[in-house]
Length: 222
Image (cartoon, rainbow, N blue to C red; front, top):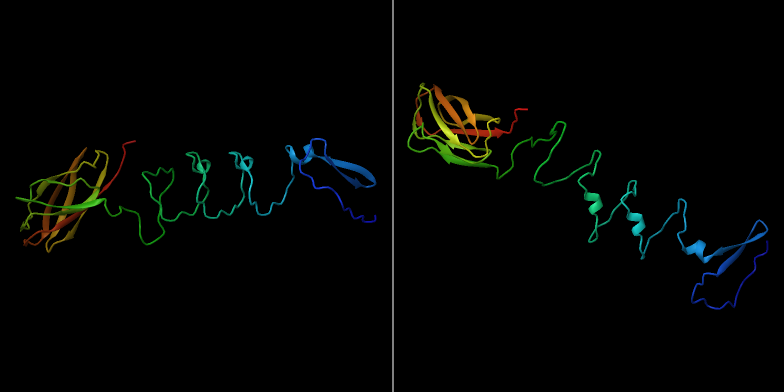
């Protein structure tokens, strides 16, 4: 087929409904109308270059599926559909994250060196006054209790820790952080808002102020 150059056509200013673009396919003259071009056209597997402007809101419906999309910096706009409460992420890689709660149905594990535990701000410290049977108050999920200065004794002594973070179903872990004497320590009477520490010296009768560390592990009965 011989190529024919077309020149001298007037400049189109308005596309009318009746306007058509003629072309020949396999010897048959056909035409493309404005309706076919601009009214709800269907494109099958189109390859789009850079979209400089226009409205592609129909491409952002809730049923749209993106496969391995690459997103640049989002400075504005609404991506609330991506932050739905029912959003499911499969094996996501998450960096530093903050939140108010996390519910899981499987294990929470750590393969790094930081481990699993409380962050800065969850702990506190308190010093026992008057005697080693005087109660203390520390409303934190972990902390350090400095005992009253006294000589170690093989006789069991006990004191109550008032702690509003504790529930009756929780488990309290406690150990000796410092002190010359060696102490045996036990937790009893775990209740809503308190627990009891009982201890005695296994070795030594040094007059000092040993420090006991504790942590609250949240538990449920069922």
